[in-house]
Image (cartoon, rainbow, N blue to C red):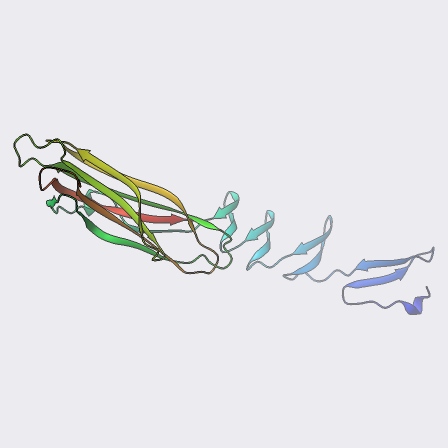
Length: 231
């Protein structure tokens, strides 16, 4: 190939060696973000510092809003988190409510989380967690109580308005008994990128359906609950 056929571009320098072979050399650009640069060890790459791959003092790094990020200890996973409510004595209510035979009632607020994954957060599921605590007793008004006396607590969730379901429950059965309950549940919750979702949590407490006395017992203290998700 004769020299007149050679044509350089902004990024490639063409030449012919002594044997007539065509040689292409990468043109070295000034050190700018997003360009190829001359490096002491050869060809280096300078990358955008505002996102994606970036050039750091320690070498190449990743900088993303969600997913992988650059931390003080190196490459790390960036996670999302949200919470509603708080279970603890500082959040307690004292309804002293009678628990009727064969009936359940809601205590405490309905907790709710609403949102969506950022469009650059790749996940099929988030991990949801709910918990609730309280203190109760079976029927102490009748002398000696009844063998079938019992009280029940239910931790329920509702995903995207699809209906309430029980994920954990506790019971206190027979006469002259009191104590506390702690309900807890972990489960995967489907959430695609950029789609809006709502998750709710509540506490139901009531008396046994089969019994010979009413009321079944008393809910003394409701410590509140928590609803949270992680991704």
